[in-house]
Image (cartoon, rainbow, N blue to C red; front, side, top):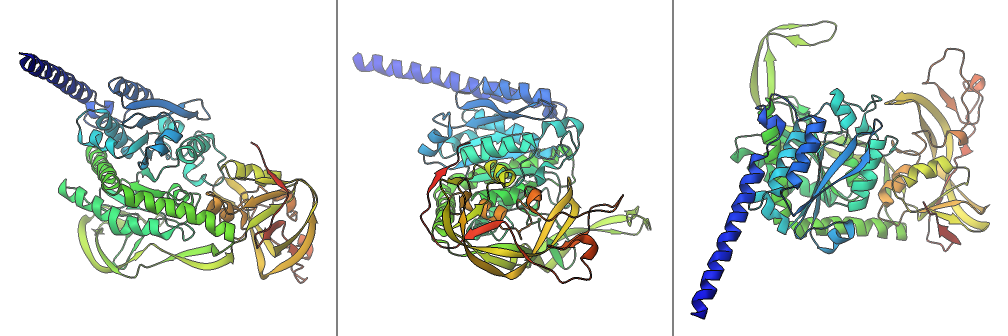
Length: 552
């Protein structure tokens, strides 16, 4: 009798659990995005997105919903955390020993397709018994559906000021991006970062790429190319979709993404994460959202199935970043181009035949379109270092370089301050020229040229001098920002203008002139350059110094 009662109790409990289980599944499934409700004729509005996320959160004990900041216009930037067991802070996430995945989109406000994909996968992650929900046994997933809501409501690429936020990852001048970098990327320290956009080339439904800069750990990029992207291709093909590299090609070569660290995909590599670009090319809205969903599911499946490999690759990159700086070993790429991979590829391109070409714009209208299979072409995504500099143990900045220090602080880079006047051996660059020109939202970005040979000196640096060691997890970012020959440094983005030679301008003259260092502008042509020591100093070997960490 006792056994029978226990049996009936177990059956009753199991039946109740089934009711709760399937009830939760049905309840979650009926909550659809407004875009889905419209048959993908409309995008989910900002206000609808907030309500949708709250409605989904109310169905799940494995989802936390919060915001990571506000935009210039005061719009909240939401994010959701999915985990089992539930984690509430980064330390708890790290303690689980699981990979941390950030799924983000809409840094370009008018690029909204992958945003819809992420809203749909939010529901799947929250739905008990779903394929995505089961992955929470292996992963922690953070969803950031809209980095740039101010741009979204305008359907513009930039934010409310018209600034391209996907060119602000090194400057971190715009609140929406600094919020995302500081409160998501540098706080949660994800192993995987997905960045969703609209772009790429027909006939592909998703175009992808990993970190493209040579200064990031190349094992991360290789794993993307050799395993992650083929895995996504297979999943896409099974669902009737196509995927291939960003951005487009012709009969000879397929072009890749830019290498600038100011772009999310490359910045993610600099912070030692798998940073993966998803671009949704021109297609019907429903195909775009659904194919983005399939590709995102595939990415999560790959990470869940290969969690140890993913985490080991990232942890090794982070550890070696610290070791390279502490031992002052290796080279820092300061000038990079791209070349072909050491193998040939095949892909499809769209050819338009006939029609007319506008002589002013070069655009073709009318005619017919057809797909052409290209075989044995070059894949132009291999970063090629054309100039490098030895990695120092640390950089020195004078106390007056406070604007450069503020820029470093935005990246949570560890900065120390000299506690007394100290004699230090250093190397520095001889500056030979300087150019001001307009670039993105900067009317007078700075490009400085130097002699190849460095100056080696000993000098007493005063109390208050800033010390930035390269032996830290943010060492790749710190080195790139403090090497003045890179394309995303504290000099280029005007954080050291007060310490550079001034360039007088004639009345009405625009940016873009060049001045020889140390020579007045009216004498620059007839006189020989007079090099000056540039005020970023390098300590080339480990040395003990009397410092304290700068608190901020």
